[in-house]
Length: 261
Image (cartoon, rainbow, N blue to C red; front, side, top):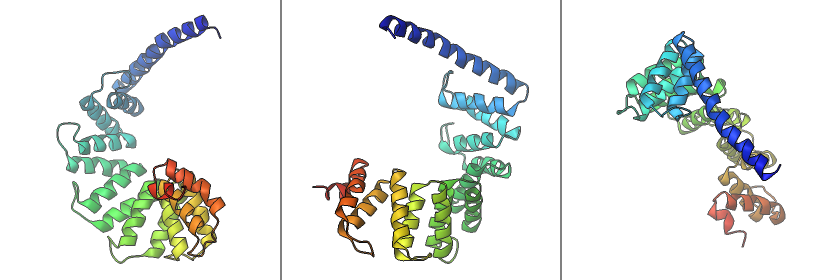
């Protein structure tokens, strides 16, 4: 493509894109006025992000709440997060928790996660670690990976009762299956030590490698150091260790960088 044609294409794009955004905004606005929850949610997101409209958190909050009232679970989540953020002038954890509960009841996993954390921390609701853990477990079963990890960490620490390494390992496994790198790394450590799950060095290395592939600097460093030095049932293999150490160093793990020179 010539420079002239490229310039023309860019000019057309600059005209068409704002028009497309404006058309989308008007369609969502009209749909929301008709009582369409998806339209309200889309428009709320635009005001929240400043996408094609002036960023306006107050308008976003009103629209998220309307979407929630119209039984759009993601609207409840957006409403709750804005109430809890302080972006509306003050933090309102009580009403945020109410919105999270409604979103969770409507089947939104992320709302269940937020509600679970609120119960564990006592934000907007009476502190109740058991209820919090139950909500996090529910969110995990709905596919929210970070909820699996949070639940596992609380179970491992005994936040809601006795420490339960077996259940913690199972929750970390759920999080890892959902591609949460920290869950994979935690499960790898459990496999390496035989903590709550059968000890298996080969499986541990595979899990550390998976977590590293998911961009966990700590996991890349851990597997690299294990292979570079040997020990804990791992055979020393500096050649295999090098790419893991290099990636860990690139991702900002100084302990790995020191072993490359």
